Amino acid sequence: MRGDENPLQDTTEYLPRHRWTQNPVVAVLMAAAIVALLALSYRASGGSGDQTSAADGGSIVSDSVPSGEDESGGSDTEGATGSGLDATDDEDSAPLEIEVDADASGDGGPEGASLLEPPPAPESGPYVSATLDLDAAPGEGLMVLAGRVPDQATAEAVLRAAEISYAPFVESQLEIDETLAPAPWLDVAPSVIGLLPSVTDGTIMVADERILLSARSPNPDYLQNLQGGLALFGQGLSVELVDSLVTDLDPPLFAVQVDQASVTLDGFVPSQAVIELLAGGAEAAYGPDQVTNNLTVDDSTYSSFWMQTMPGIFQLFRAFPAYKFTVEDGQFSGAIQGGVNFAADSTEITPEAAQALDIGVAILARDPSVGMLVTGHTDSQGPDEYNQNLSLSRAQSVVDYFVAGGIDSARLVATGAGESQPVADNETADGRAQNRRVEFAFGPASKLGG
View (cartoon, rainbow, N blue to C red):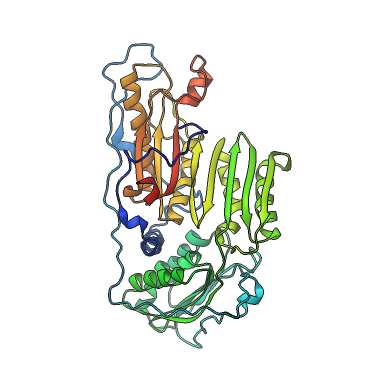
């Protein structure tokens, strides 16, 4: 896949048809499922680097490679398959009534935030609450985890779930009180507290065998979707809306393109402070002289949690020499070139490649509406058919790695380009090493699937 191509085009042939990914309700429900699974098995979050490759069974055996060739031992593998998580709406759960506050300032700022009433914490007994406040400075109350729990295991599960969704901005005020009676209904907390970014911000509290919600959103549909996720994964607990604020703001647009440490930022965002946050994050990662900032202010747009996480993403993405992505209508899409390379005649994921792949695991874990197309490549050594098979095997080894990290295989597709798309000169050893690679296209799974 070349840098001048649209990574979201011409992929219909390879991608699974899962129409459920077009439903925004299911996107929220799937987010809850991912958080619940990862809370039980903390495999990947923000490039943690603790994954293990699942490519052990995919070893490459050569039967027709001339001696002295640079690559040998390729074997064909099938594309990614697997059943997705079948999340459905709770048919017995009636939607909450959402009112648009006509008196709200609509700017998503402190004045609007003051109109939002959080759920009151119980004076006694166990509870867990997660509050995301986009008006707070990062690290100073941006995400606060609070509550009283009866045991260490519950505290650890809740904290891990919060870190998966909100790292590195989690401020934990959880208390362990072993005098409290066991509260099995608290088991739903890791499954639901990570869903606030699906609206904008607010508080989710699990207390007194109920789920209490107070949320600010630019769209009442987002609040309805969040209710569906809370109801489905609440395991029978009632969902009560304490307060809501619909700001009726438009989605921002953000695009970044990086090529060999040269960064270009485009789009429109809510405020100059957000521009400084995004541009400052890029400059910290690549240097001020490397950043072209074309961002503008549109105060009719809303702030979102991805703006806070972007400086960290810039640091993580330094592992990739070239990438581009866009956040539009709340959806994340783009392409990554380079950064994951292979030894000659190998599909084995190196430790350096694993560090880069962990970033991909984190992207997919945070947003279950995103799918990924993995394309393998080879250098020009060896027969064309063999290289085609080897490139597909390399892509499949990456897909297996993602699945081992907890990503549903239905969101992943492997394909091979063989030697047909070199990015460097195959006449040199260094050029061939650059061509032995995999590349990624990612975006809403419904768009990738046609």
